[in-house]
Length: 611
Image (cartoon, rainbow, N blue to C red; front, side):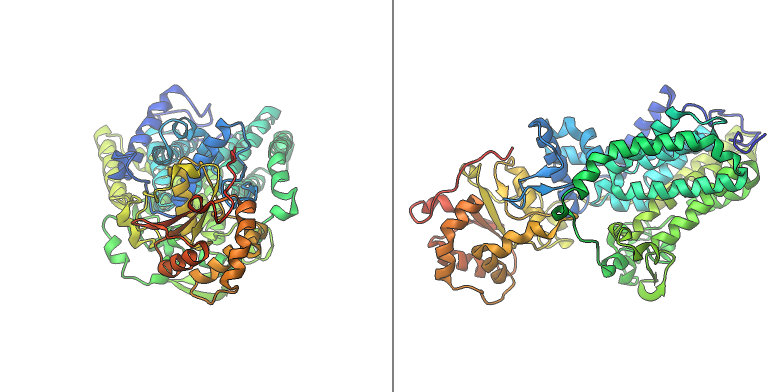
């Protein structure tokens, strides 16, 4: 028998589904189980979905804005990859940003009906469940054991890495396309005679990764090379004869589907962002010993870990690459026992673990929190301009976690096969489940309430924005501080809560070209406010700025200035009072200067529809 046909240990009689159609009605209750686990892992906020956004305030607010913007654009028949609601008057190209198209499509019914908070929270639960579910399907393909596959799904979907990204990166939690693509690759490689339609499915699955996160597309292409290389080493050159048709069909399908996005990204040179700096890439690399460092939210060891070297967490929740003893032990058993029973899968997973773990370490090694100048295995990858668009090497770890989850499922199968007693097997599964829960749970999971201000000082009141006059709809609002994290995201959240009736001159995108900031240097009032917020001398005198105001109001369609609560709030309020000859509406977390109150002093803003 060819290794291509070997799927499961011969003595495994529970389930003979490896290699068959990977989705059946009997699998759907498993998805429901994972959804319930998603609610459980996100307690207590998951019981109050309308109260606050799950996770830390910051990036989670940006992703909530993307879900909201996507629903708004679709409902107005607009292209969601462009927006004029932020960085007005620019039309911002969002193709480079983490727009979350897959998550946005799945959350669309909620975005259009129940609002951004519930839509985001439901989407987060759903993405965790889908990641676990498709990992389950992959494990089931490998080991043909439903119980072990369910455990494998938990090991991936609710891993410390995934729960770390759930603190703020919805696009990275949308990881289910990776095991889905893995399944499609395996389908192509296991056929005796390659079929074009398998290749078309392969290309579609790769396109889904691009609609989840571009980094995942890069990872899947690299994963394809690794898997094909392993199979080629095992089966020899006849493999090429079997797979060239579906591989070619997959490449053509993906190219055709991705071409419109590619043109949006590269068609206009002014829309192309700069690549990340080396220092930022190194800061978001995994630690060499991070495998043994639990999350600071760990149920048992979190309080202890917080007192360890702070450098261990310089990458934030991107750098949580802990696996835990249960997964490591099961994975070790799985590889050792299956290296003969199913050599193809054992080698595929082991080599993938080694390569992607090495890439996650970044261009230079960080060892126990200390950044060194020792070149890492990924130094060549990050020496290319293309590589620097994968700005956080620690993200490569998602493939490592998936492979360990599969190996863990294989290890559990082997342990089950060691005994003929059903009671012992059930006890084994129960024991593994309890130990995994203890090691993986990070409850209480945080929510973006006012208590979260300890993490981001700019969000003193996280889900409450300033009270803006409704008459400002159709105009533009300038928020201060300008371009200073996390205030632009706070402004975007304020815009959501006010229904998106006005545009912002500020905003935040993951990747943005320099041109979207040009307005801040051309308009005197924006340039002078930038100096005031930084505590520096104003570059222009007040009379010059006042003289430029009519043109600024017409050009930017200005309706109001909003000064948030930050260190230079009083200085900024005083400065605007001198420029505008009016007092602002002082509120708990901001001061609002409504330009309509001075219609005799300055021309009124135009009222336009932004969609």
